[in-house]
Length: 296
Image (cartoon, rainbow, N blue to C red; front, side, top):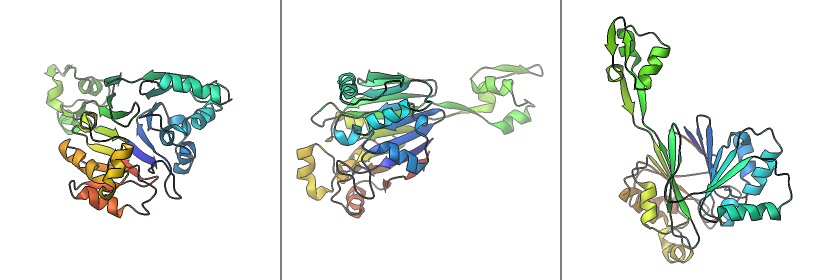
């Protein structure tokens, strides 16, 4: 599981920071959180093939979170992209994407499916599920949770001690099924243990609200906007954003393990003030940079 931060600025990009986009690589899945202007070029600089994207989660339809979408889809439509691109967003996403295809002229050869996510689980797969919760930003906005399902992990030392060979028998135990070997019944719990799945939360463009806490609850990694430092709290409230201190308070109250800050106003030449502001209330903090990677 690897996160790549493709864009960490807010509305206005800078020389060092592109508009918002975060890519999660998980097995055969590639989940893109938002798609700011220039995101496909960020993929190329990062060395990540565009065809790795399988799902796009759009938090809301302000331009700095979606202006890269038509370009990315146009490029995918001209490649040998296999499968169906899944696009999830708040209420109104289907209509906006239809309008997008009316505004731009390019082949619609790309197979894609659009779903408007409502509160709670909107995707439930074999290895993970995705949840959405409403945020408060003046337009329909969602926070997203990626929840990896618990996995049964085989202790190969215990398995070898019982003489169990690698192969189908190990696979059955890993799936939670008892086996018989050398006349002895072996239960999954004899040689396996449950490994708790990771939770990644994504909160951007909102004021503190109930949906923030539901999204961030017990996250192993909380990715959260910190558009302003607390000195500009009035501006943050006016435009429906969180300060760095707000992000730290959210992480603290939601019992998140680590906080990664993104979506910085272009007024900040560096993130020192942002980091210090958040660290006053929460210690385990990273201010993201474009192309930063985190392994979980």
